[in-house]
Length: 562
Image (cartoon, rainbow, N blue to C red; front, side, top):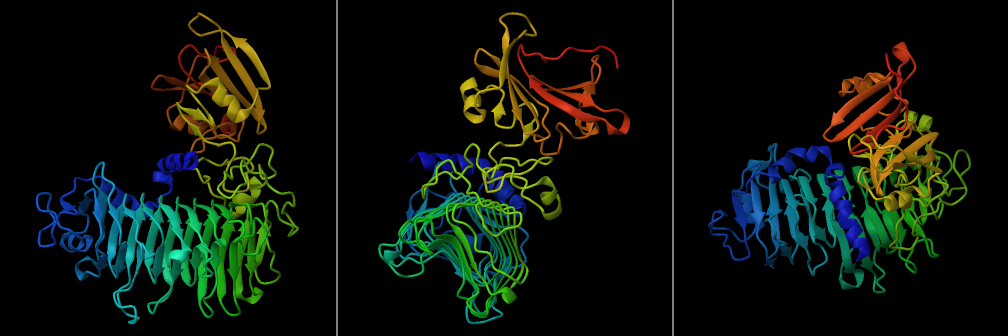
């Protein structure tokens, strides 16, 4: 229960960062007033209006125009929902959006299937089919190579057991809970594969929780995600927990292709007793060319796993295959030849820049927390210079910023968030936070001293931490944070403003000089943000940044004059 509460908070945090930017228009549409309504008490003889709702999603899809929002009323929907290709929507620029009505929790007990349906989005729905295939689709006619395929489809902020995507194009499943089923009940893996229309293309899985999947002794394919032929697959910010067999499997497409793949910022573990590769941790990614299947343009980076990443790949069938910045409790197979390359992974014996010592996680159990533990070898393991050349994710699995001017943690978690939010936070410390919460995040400070208050009264307390080549300062008033400061280049805003950055950036966002030499201020509501200057002329840079409120004052003397 505690983990599910944490995942709910994770979904809130990833509503913006977890959903691809291409969904911005549809997200705006879902905020518009709904004109249409589907209800368990409706009738498909109706026009799906608020006063005369229809019964099925198919009927509402037929009636709706691109950009329309269809509310889904509370209750259970037992009939099979099949949305079919509609030529009038083939060239649409906006989606038809099905969204749970305010306060409603609609449940579809026969799932939702798409037969060539296009430009459609589902928000906040629960799919709980007894047949074992809750969500997915195919082309309008699976046997016809020219048949319209399911295109531009989004399922987000919902709950389902399994999904199957056959020759889909531009499909996104985001911020949803996936699992809670047993293979023993005729269920199969979550699948991405091809039909007569060719490889699935542009598939995105982001911000999802895959968990609570059991086998019941079944011997069928058992994994959280099974991928055959695909051209364009992005798997980011997901939690594949306690997966039977393995978390993510690529194989069984003897003459097919798997290309243009990014697997990034995921947590992964397998279910003891079922793990491919044996042992308690087994393989959490299993990729096998099985003779002639080819893999090209594959990047697997910044994932945290209790198990091994096994790449059983014929070197001639692996082109531009990069594996870097992962934190692996079970190691990494290291294929020789071809263009396979592994760099700055932790828990890996491939030599080169990889680190042999294992990472340590907060909780390594199959349903655990794979955030980096204090002192883990993954902290700061990936050099800034490597990221500048090869590219590293700017945020971690929780949406926390990774550093722009400092070495990056391997794995999906950046232990100390590197972001500054003007008027609110520096790293994990936040104005208004309790002292106990700061200590939980950063430990005991290196030094604590008394500090005069700006408006008189009881003195404040200034705690100092030595972090990331600089200092982090926290000012307390009666056990609450009223001021924050840092001189470490590790921390910056999303735009790059922070210590070590150009002073011109501070001026461009509203910081103005004060009577104090080399000091610039900017009021953000009740918070005063201050930067101090280092260097002269065109080399002026930010030396330190402060955020303060209430009675807090800077613990530095003002040198008058400029």
